[in-house]
Length: 113
Length: 115
Image 1 (cartoon, each protein chain N blue to C red):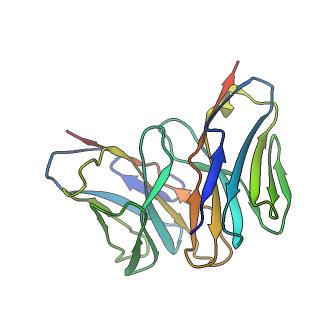
Image 2: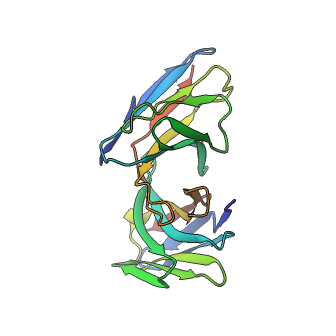
């Protein structure tokens, strides 16, 4: 089955700096890669996603890049703000059999004012 | 809650008691999922269902049971066989799109505590 590794597990940045979270996946058939943000005690919410036919996608301060050859994808947050503090999860979707998302273990991002 | 509702928000279970967590969606999604989240941990899949009257075990199904009698509903029962059920439980749904992949919509969660 699919295996998703996420790094780092914790990340602290100064307000205004950039944050980068990296994930690797094992199944070359995976074709959809969403990112979720979870605030304390709340449900995960989809913030950005990318499909395997695209190398990069941006939405204001958030961007995701995908390297299919190396089987890794990354979340980039620029000009971080205190409200970006949360746990971020990456995930990979394998259409070959399981039809479900496999999640990374999460990264706790703290933005220091 | 964006089309998928979990209830109750908080639930307390006594030792040896079965409890049922409700998950209802009005998004017309085919697939539904149950995840367990422990403090500071990631999401672990308990059960999932891709069609009515069919469901599959996830990574940690022992001590849990589900049913999928209606497309909109996917209740989770935490049985007395689950020895450490205290956790945050999340239900999710997604369009069936096999091979295409879609993001999950999550419910707001149920926090279960053993007393």
